[in-house]
Structure formats: C-alpha cells, structure tokens
Amino acid sequence: MKKYLMMGAAALAFGFVAVSCSSDDDVYNLNAVNDQVVAKYQKAFVSVFGQPAANQTWGFGAPATRSVNTNANEWADPSKTYGGYLVPDPLTEAQKLRVRKYFQEHPYLTYQDPEFTDYFVQQVYKGNPETPGSLSSEQYAQATSNATPFTGSGNMDYLTFGSKADGTYFEHTNNFNGADGGMNNNVLDNGQKVGGSSHSDQIMLMLDSKTDCVGFHDSRSDTYHVTGHCALVSAAVIDAWVDSLVAAGKESIGAPVTDKWNRSFVGLDYESKPLAQAYAKNNDNSVRYAKYTDFFNSTPAYVYLGKNAEEEDVFVKWNEWEHKDEFVKTSSNKFVPCLNVNGSEILGTVEGGGKNTYCHNMNVQEYDAQNKKYNTESRQCLDLPLLQGYIDRNGMPNLKDEMKFIINPGGRDYVYSDWIVTLSQANKIDETPKPSLRVMAEDLSAEDASDFDFNDVVFDVQYVSANEVTITLQAAGGTLPLYVAGEEVHAKFIAANPGVGTDQGGTVDVHTMINTGAARINPQAPYSSAELASKPTWSYTGYSDWSNVQDTFAGQVRDQISITVDKGKGPIVLTAETGKAPSKIGLANKLQWALERTNVKNAFNFDQWVQNPNITLTATAE
Image (cartoon, rainbow, N blue to C red; front, side, top):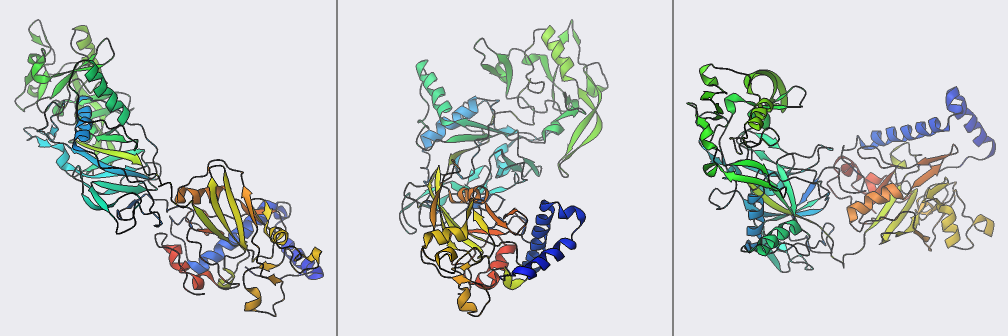
C-alpha cells in the first residue's frame, strides 16, 4: 500500500478535491465511495498480476473443482499437507459377496446424497452374467432388431462423482474404469510415514468433491449417465437384510459390512441407450410413452408383479411367469403384449400396418446423445397409460411407474449391480496437528507493483475446538485503522507491548507500521515504524462449527474472521472471492510475510500462483 501521511491543511485539501470530483450522489453515498475504492484496487491488481484463474480461491480452501489425491503412499502420513487420513480397511471377499447379493436381489433402489466432500472410494463388484441368483442377467441389447446381448459393465467406461450445481458431474474418478477399480499396491498403513508399511487395495481418495451426482460414461453410446442410474444403501441396511433371512431360517450370506468405517454402498445400473430413446416422453414431461419400434426388443429377465400385503416388491422370472404366453415374439425379434379378448388381439399387429387406440403417433422428445439435448419428433408409440387401464380391467399384472411392466426391455433393468463401489468419509487421524492458517491482507491502497506487499495485516488463526479459535497478530504494515474480528490491530499491538503507545510516551499509534521492516528499508522515511516482540493473541468464539479439516477450516476463516479497513468513509470488508482480485490471502504453510514495499511477486512465486491455483505459494527471496 502507499504508506504516507498528510496532516492538517494538506489532508483537508485532499479530501476536498476527492469529494469535488465525485458525483452528487457519491457525496451522500458512502457505499458508492467505498465501491469505487474496491474497484480501483481490483483494477490495479489485474494490471500488475493479470486476470486470476477462474478457480483461484487464494488459499482459503482447495480450488472450486473437485480433485483426486492419487498419492496413496501419503494418505495416512500426518506430516503431509494432504495426509493424515484414516484409511479404511480393504473389504473381504465375504463382505463383497453380501453387498453384491443385496443389490442383485433388490431392484428399484434409490439414491440419497451422503453429502461427502472428502471421502474414499473402494471397488466392490463388476457386473458379470455368470453370478447366480441375480434378478438381473447383467446383459443388455442395443435397441435395434436382432441385437446381440452384451455385458453392460464392460461398457461403463469410467466412474464419475460431482455436482450438477457446479458442473463437475462429468469428472472422472482416477483408476476407476470399465466398472472396476485399479489396484493400488502402495496404500500407506494408518499412522505410518512415507516409506513405512503399506497394503494393496482398489481405492482412491477424493478431496473437495461432491456426491450429489454419481454415474458413469457409456463407451458404447458415448453417453454420460450422471443421475438416475445410481442407488445408495448403508451397511446397516444390508446387514439387517441378512439378519432377517437368518431369523426366517435361511442361510446367512457373506460377512457383516457394518464396521467403524461407516460405509455406504453405491450401485450403478447400466442402460444400453439413453432412456428417452427407448421410452419417449410427452412434451410436458408429465407422461412417458414407449416407442413401439423399440418395445421389448429382447427376452425380458423378469416381471414386476406389484406389492404384497407387507408392501414388499414382488418379482417373478420371465420363464416362470404364468402370463408369458400372452406375449408374442414378432418377426423383428420384439416381445409385445397380445392381450387376447374373445380371440381378438386388441393390440393388433402394428408391424403389419394394423393400428388401434393403444398405439398411435405422438409428439415426443427424443434424446440427442451427441449434443446432449432433447428434440421434439412425431413417433409411433405404445400408449402405456391406456394399456395400463386395459390391464387393470382384465386382471393383468400392474405396470409400475408406466415403464416398468416388463423388466429389462433392452434398455435397463433397474437392478443396480452392474458396478458397485463403497464410499466412506475421509476422517483425520486423531494425532493430526490441528489446522491453522496465516492470513495476509492489503488495505485497498495499493496502486502500483511495489504497493502490493500484502503485509498491511498478517495474523494466524489456530483451531482449538469446534467452538473456538485463537488469533495471533504477526504484523500490521498498514497506516489506516484496520480491524480483525472486530479488534483494531494497532491497538492490540500497543496493549500487548506496554509503553509503546503515543499516549504512554512511545511512538506507536494507528499510523505506525509494525513488524514489516520499514525502518530497515528506508530509515529516513516520513512515517512511523516499530518492531514489537510481543504478538497479541486472543480467543475468538463468535462461531461454533469450526472444522478440523484444513481446507474446510481455511474456507471458514475466510468467511467467519472479518477484516475491515476504514479509509474515512466507513468500514470496507476485505475479501477473497474465487477468481477475482483478492485483498486477503491464506497460507497453510505460514510463509514469512514480505518486507515493506516488496512486491509479493518478488517475495513469492505470486504471479504464477495467481494464474495457477494448483501450485503451492513459496518464497523466492528474503
């Protein structure tokens, strides 16, 4: 910042000129004046360092996009910046068996976001048509005539986690491809240092990620399925299911999966074509219709019969279903309902040109996989709501949600066992040092390169508990009233160093540069400076949800520990908005702050960091 003082008439003259050059509105609008100060500062910042990277968060948490930590040999090492995590144990084959059987025998599951940000992903199962007892064959056919069935998991190109809200839902989870997880042979055992004992597992650590969208990329159709094709089940639910089997006199399955890792299991359901191509939907999205030309294009795996008296879903294998003879296989290898009434086929032979009220042209939306959008087209469709009415009147099995009368009509089967993984929250080892952050700020007075020294205030924030942090001032290089968490920083230094204040016979006041080496840079400079040994420290309890995870903690420091400067027109809040010129930055590694009037790009690799948030800010000069 510009460090100079103007007293008396000079200060008045400056104030008069500044106001005279403002608009009439600005004279009475302090917010507008302060907005001009911020805008001028941000313009100067960009002129010196360039436009910041769009995902630069200035040290207050990881960049806004999700990330994968592939360094498995550091995960459990507390001395590493992104280490110190409790790494979950590998699943045993007996545990994997129990999970697989649950997903294979429970279709129509749902997904509820566990709201994880840091978590481990571990492989459980890759779909295989040879596994016995599954309601799904885990084989599919493309929605064309005479299509050869194929195993769906072989086309699940890679696993994706993320969020629709921030556009990260197409992001690939490293080493999870082809419905399988790559084996990592260097997973550090908990509490070890790099080079210590390790084990092997199909596992990956996700940091600063989100879990509201889970899906996969289908290499066969080059389509992303990021919502609606996943289901989440807790370990407790799976174990309770097996307990109920045992209580009913049946054999147990596998081994318990409820343990200290609090796992959640995610199953994915393959689909051979985008849903809207196998089942078109009405323009208002309210009712779906089956396109007759794609209807039942392969032998169904099983049929949904509705709910029993205990409100449980009931299914029957196709070959064991008493009504299967009421369906015929057409010349183009499609299964369609005959629904014979008095010897007359109600549905008719549409392929031969016959039509009736159950099949007719409708305006529908077809999915364009290449452009990822829907187009309105006129198509010949089987009207499922009308067909449902006929089925109800004639005692046929119910359609479930219109589309699920016959399971696995070539598109999908709603059994989430084509790919199964487990998620567990990435928790820190108890002995991990508590998070802390150094904050360095500018008071919005910088105008040229030498002004950007980011030492107008420097302080450390140390985690104590969820209800408390401590704040320790290190330096105050500004010459304006500046407040941290409501405390004026010069006043705090004076209180911590008795006798230095001007009211105590000393030379330190609100205009004094403290602990920034100003006297060494220019002993004759017309400003007050001081090097004070005692660093003010105080407890802050104005927030009660502090995290002990470093990146989350850093973001909380940005949002909860306010920094304001008063330039004569009321307080201005110093900010660090993602992708915009910051007036404060955070440093987990506690670098020594720059000396007075030393541009931060000469003290650190600051200009490179502005453009690339994935590098670490380091010192380049004393």
